[in-house]
Image 1: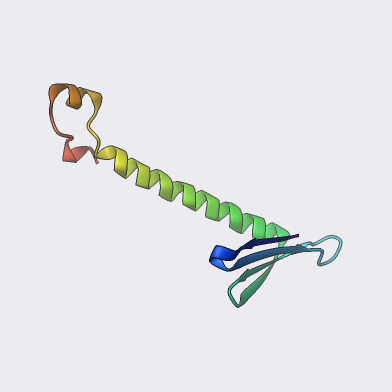
Image 2: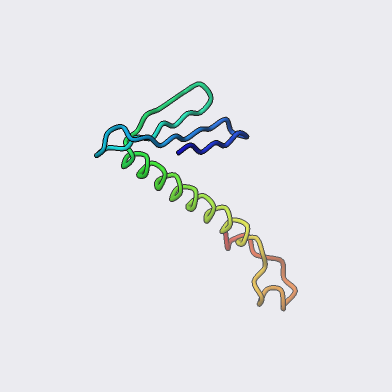
Length: 83
């Protein structure tokens, strides 16, 4: 199985290293890393979790600057201390 992201010059190839331990070749440009399937899966899940945390923090920062319904009803600007 081969997965390519041409925009990022990334190729992920899954192969049968042996019957019990499939391997994944991760190529970014000219650099290639070979990982056991379990190690690749752990790495991928860690990247997804860190991306989710970063997105959540970013969105919280955006929402922190928006006036609450009560502040909007009173005509007050959003408080800077709510961030």
